[in-house]
Image (cartoon, rainbow, N blue to C red; front, side):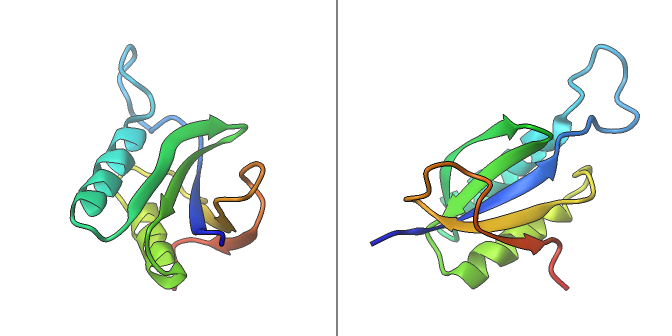
Amino acid sequence: MATIVVEIHVPFHPAPAVPEGEYPYPWIDVIEDFLCRLEDEGEVEVFDDGEEFGDVYVFFLTGAKEEALLATASRTATLDGVPPGVFAMVTDDEAEEFGFGRRVDLPLT
């Protein structure tokens, strides 16, 4: 039986006002820290390491019901420094590649 996975797709844009020579994507660390904290608390599981995929950076969640995973994805979209335009894809662990599934615009209203 397939396990639900929610992919969080974040536009792969450098953060504004990052000094030259600094890492231009500090929001990746912010999101990873946030998701790791939630995983440690048992709310969700980080399914796989995040990775760049075309013009987005994708994070993967599982380990909870769809509603809880989408709520976490929505909270992720509103973290400080995260670029606008975040969306989720609802899929499962049997998908041959990511980026396919049902799209959900974030944050949820």
